[in-house]
Length: 418
Image 1: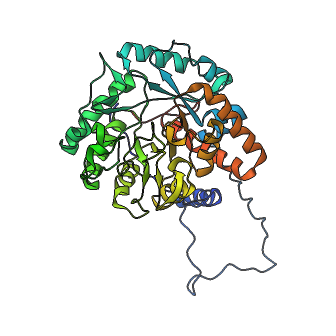
Image 2: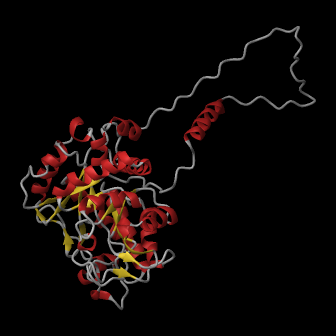
Image 3: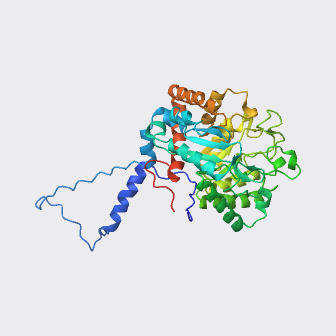
């Protein structure tokens, strides 16, 4: 795969009616308009003595449903809900361990966890998973198959067939062109193994005076740098490379984990950021990542005093809807960090899924696949009882299918340009 046009994240500016009007106007462009009536061009006579003619009928214009609309309309309720879930596939599990989740429970997305060794194993597993896609299981919609392939200590796919990317700090020392070229190569390895989403790059900025005391990012050297400009430049180059290689990139962990001390995966305390605000310069790498064409934004489970006190980011409407979708103008897929994190353990699993969608999120990522049926049932129950929540589910399904259409995963998709 060579270059692919990077989408520009903008809200739709033309309504359906407006689009139809533009289409009609566009058709008339081939025939010059009649000249305006002037004193030198007498107006046609309206005398009753002249012949009368009936006005020509105006042809009706029927909008052809898009591929996304066609697909969404063909899905059952369970299949629609399944598009909003991503479940973990552990490297030690059997090849068929997620068959029921996909075929019976209609889960639409998978993430590889636990450290997978060898491209052959990953390829066989990816082929098996996509082979489960059917009209009955997922409505014919292909799966997002994701992995964390950042570099340094965080690379879930290892061994023969996979290059180990250097640490983020080492990547940041490369020129943007060199990093994009390298990331393109890493992406092609992922794509060849059936992985179509990389949950990277990390766009968190860790201040220099915190450094390794920042457990989720700084401790492992996952940050590109301690200033937003460095993070922006390197992460953007990484994203472009992923897209060039045919893999969707993900900016994470919005609105930033760089200023907390404890790891949200393992702690419910020490995870509050009292500094980040809606105008914080640390948000700029996320904005740049969106503009570079990242297909997903991952929202974390830390808490932000100046944004929505006491509420985990993934459950926060002010953070997801107002800040990310509103202020940053992001209209794409929002995915969560693992909802099994200690930071959100006080909320029952089924309620976590509802809270994510209610906040404006789309895909609920759970490393524990066994809770997926409860999450799906809770989403369906709330949607049936609450029209406003139903509208949010509809919007989320549309966003997920729009991304999958871009990736060529819908039955009617043309797929990415090669």
